Amino acid sequence: WGAAVIASLAVTVLCLALFAVALRVSPLEELGIPFTLNVPRTLQLLAVLTPLTFVGAALELVVATFARSFKEAQTWLSFFSLIPTVPAMIVVFSPFDSAVWMSAVPVLGHQSLVLDVLKLNPVSGASIAILWATSIAYTALALAKSVSLFRQESVIYGR
Image 1 (cartoon, rainbow, N blue to C red):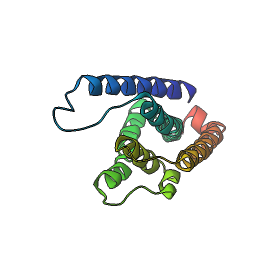
Image 2: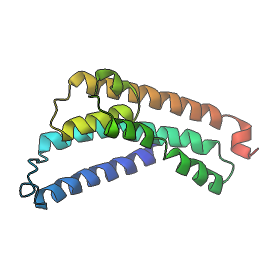
Image 3: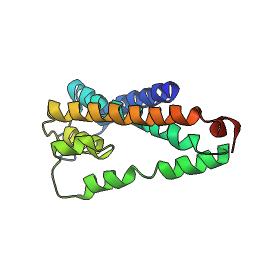
């Protein structure tokens, strides 16, 4: 889990850095789009996306533990990676604004807060605190499930 989190965080930081560079060199002002990604906004994005790496890695660990082979794990995880697109599509195509309660829902809260940051809407500290607290709780539950699965002989020695 730790290795997956570190890799995910490294990729997240790299993507945010490259996103910032791409926005600096793109002619947004010429297109009539007044947007800049400054350091505080980038740090907000990092604060919103970091808990998602914890939850994602823990849930993938649980899903992969149920697999009997490498190919089966790949199949399950490829399907599992499609699940977060549903809340993302809800946020992108919905006409409603983000609310504090959304922060408690994995991916939906992350996506709504990312859009708030990118739309220059104010992001409340309560939303980020709820996002972190629920993400840590979901991560702890998933890791506890993984530990309980790894204690079963059928998981360790095959089924």
